[in-house]
Length: 96
Image 1: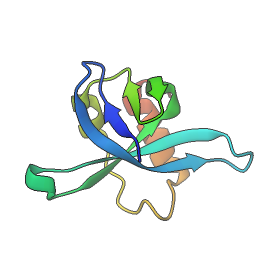
Image 2 (image 1 turned 135 degrees about the vertical axis):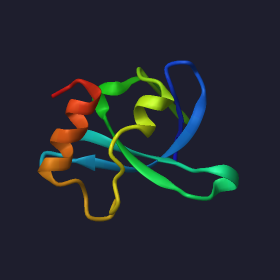
Image 3 (image 1 turned 90 degrees about the vertical axis):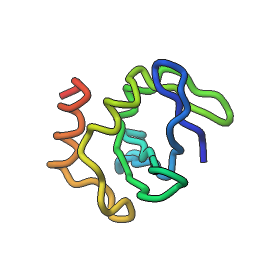
Image 4 (image 1 turned 120 degrees about the vertical axis):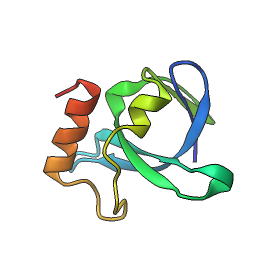
């Protein structure tokens, strides 16, 4: 797990899963955020294009925390994102 920082260098989540295609090319990361005292965990897909910096223990995104938290949530991270959700997420971040 890597810590996730937003464009303002604020820590707000952790990477829980990576989503790759059949050619093993990374397309999305699953950023998990939680509410007060760790309750209410939510999974948010973030396109790999939003990652601006990566170090051994963290990634920094080129978007702020609000953009991630306002994206559609991902209810079943074990199943992987379907095509419609992928399209919706890319449009939300302006990569569609």
